[in-house]
Image (tube, rainbow, N blue to C red; front, top):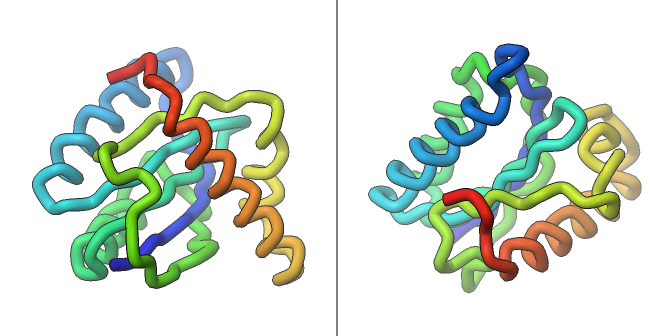
Length: 140
């Protein structure tokens, strides 16, 4: 299995962002459940971060689809690693509410930085997403 983390700029239609996020989650949850992918999504300050985990062919196909999705721009894959077990095992797609802790992390990760800066920010973001996904979700 692999884990893939990416960030992108959100290209959502103004005025209906909440509805669009609900749609993204509904489609992702249904599709991910069918292909055995789990993960988490966070949106903050116009940036998405999403962690996908599952068998490599399924995760890679989802990433190809995301790269083609017009709701994303400036997609940057931050980390692809082999994993023995899932962090988000019971969640086809958890929505992580963005609290003050990661603010600015997504923007920093969306910009190119040094490998050391990116590595520390990636680890912090993944740990935050895992902690928050353990809490009960409000949406879906």
